Image 1 (cartoon, rainbow, N blue to C red):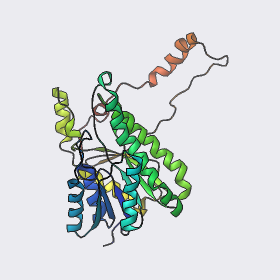
Image 2 (cartoon, rainbow, N blue to C red):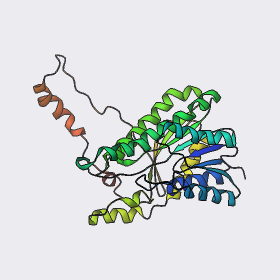
Image 3 (spheres, rainbow, N blue to C red):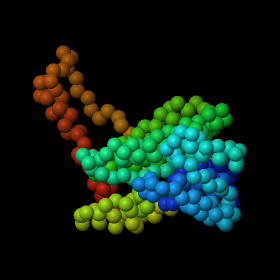
Length: 304
């Protein structure tokens, strides 16, 4: 039986545990050679441990696949370049990069300190840029390549206590779209996945109400492995005409997310004053205002 990713080389960041681990195993099972990148840090981004990345490599090799471990941080430009260089040195090429590495430093905005903001932005948003930018010259020179970037409904919809994470994840959606617009002429694709799954990061969510406990209990039923098939498809040649999109996966459901577009406009030929804006523009637009929904408000039904 032919494998969808036969002959391809895939770099997966944050691949030592959770969703990243499942991505790596699925990519290898479908014929890809995999660079398993993981710093081995805690959920908060502290510490280092080479064990998780090597354990995933061992699993892949035990199943007959081919993989190499890398423990460089995505949050530093030189280090991110070493991740890509590992692929080039070991396998001689890169076909797909999955920007999955992430940390959490959850806190209400009015209590969030600068270090918590910067740490999350550095790993998620800056890290996605660094790794994507590091491989861009290879993709451009060979007129091929694929990015898969992990976003979140915390940014696409909203959530409490995650200003740093939400800003980074919404920024990643913008980064992904910009990559496509700049690199489509070189045959390069980029898409986003917003995952719904129980993982080590989600397990760090504080539970301080019955509502939160009920939500977390639902999340515990969502397997990280359910996200991997979409990633395999997007990394394959079968998805050659799929680019610039934002997908979500929740158990057996796959979503396509909308992207920001104007909803309605109002105009006055004589122009606007603050008063006429209040009297005319806002009342006309107000029916289209968005509520302060959180992700769980929008996805209110049980997973399928």
